[in-house]
Length: 113
Image 1 (cartoon, rainbow, N blue to C red):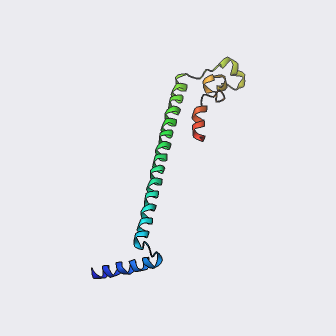
Image 2 (image 1 turned 60 degrees about the horizontal axis):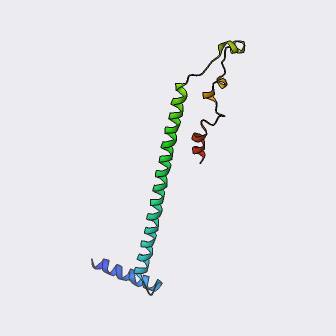
Image 3 (image 1 turned 90 degrees about the horizontal axis):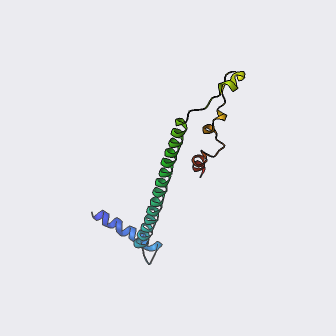
């Protein structure tokens, strides 16, 4: 215990040499300020992570809803038009499979926002 007291006095004397006005109190104040700044930064980062998680959940929900709606509308195949094309129907004739109509635009835009 005596050794701890001596160590503290030596540290305070060294701190007074570096900062004659505040000594250890100045270092403590600076460290407390740094802790407060880091706590604020951590809180902002946690809020940003929560926001990203919510956006991801909304994106997945929207994508699933779009997929379930597209599955409710079966593709339209016109066999008589495609028999001369090796019996391969074109999905582009079904409006529910068009990616150009903007149906999936909100989903994909959210990925790149």
